[in-house]
Image (cartoon, rainbow, N blue to C red):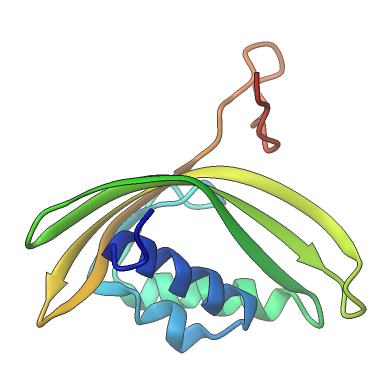
Length: 144
């Protein structure tokens, strides 16, 4: 996918912000009135202050670990003022020495709008499929 694509640019910035645990860079990707359907803990998160607080808690909970986000299967539709797309994100936690600790993959959809020349996420939705028998989220992508 084209690196000039605003959806790809936001994903790349997201990956970098998470890897560096940079709350300011993370929050800068979102509008002040962002509405998030996250799959962890909260049914819905509204507003940048709440989303920023989530990121602060997440990043600080990692201690010396860091998380590498790798995106796959990126696709988007772009107009002059809106960008909508989806991807798979794999989150891999690494120990300070680089050892892989754990990993999970989820699905993400983002809706972006151009505000004063900058693309910002105004809606984000993360999910994982649910196993019918166990009712547990499937956090490892299974390819067929």
